[in-house]
Image 1 (cartoon, one colour):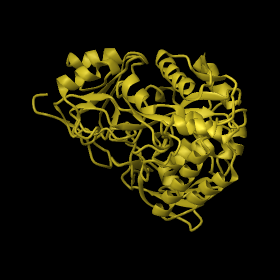
Image 2 (cartoon, one colour):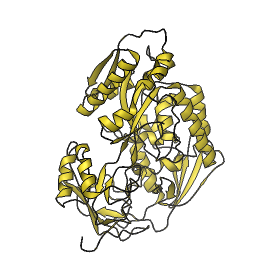
Image 3 (cartoon, rainbow, N blue to C red):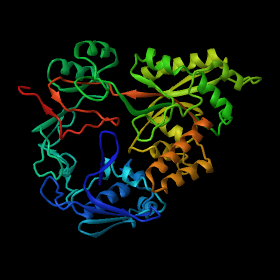
Image 4 (cartoon, rainbow, N blue to C red):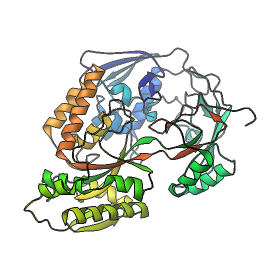
Length: 467
């Protein structure tokens, strides 16, 4: 229904118009008249009903990880457990979709920017859909997805919005650890856009220059993105059930040295929970994100803590960071830290079950709102799921509910900011750093801008003559 612009503000996509009642519980969306799928069939309200039910119902062996985005829609729990249709999503007529929520949420338009909530055509169950999905965007599949090799799309001349300048785009597929291969292919002229490995950044900047604002090409694009790296505490497990212990550990960490020296400037030291690219983000909301060993020691004066274990997913980069954190804590507070690397497939279930007391984890926004850094991570209803710090605070729940139930956008952002400050005052986690994009764009590419969420509006990108 919606998309985010370069500033991650919400603008209409398939929605021509929409209304919401005073309580923020009943939305009506009117679909644009000329909205069509890539096969030429019209996009109608039933296509959204189908898409959302498909996500929530899933199948016994394959439940969608995006279902929680629709948690407030009436009928969600019944739909998840019995695969019955969502009662809160209805096609009033061909062009009108009605959505009823179980609780007020004026942030729903931000949620509806998530690509998984796009419409799905009637023949979705056709086995060909996975290899050649049919969407309603500016580009369409030129051929079936070549798994492990590439995805090729071409301009959709029937697109209802701004039509692309480019005839086609090829997304070359590389493995998880193949950033060096992609950068090599860029240097050899086979790619226009690629990831730059950390150890190649200095050379890449010297050869190709650096983006003037961190987000626009050409050159190395290294603006801050929306990925938060944090150290979490199980607030129900001693000694982390004491807020002063959590605050002291957070102030023992030298974020600047980790981000700028250990990681060669590929990260940004965190002074907040909500990254700068999110509308309404405010600096210096984290009073315990400063490196202040003296103040940290003062918080624990007269106390002697037993050794603690720091858990992290087993990976060389994560171990290097964990070693730096261990050194900071041991030197600042004299607390022995044992490192506990774990396989990722086992790690997440252990965190959700509350079996790990001190750990590293990350979070990336699913939609461009401070709400997505607050409700999933600290809402009491999410303890044992996304709320791995196991904080259950009625005041925080109330603030989140108040923000969601506030129609005025500026006031809603103020309430989210108040919630963020309250959370960080309790220090259930220690924000450590935000990631940078670390991408490179060829100088023949024009008007390419990488947003804070990593997306690019390819409709306005073009290539210089002769490219």
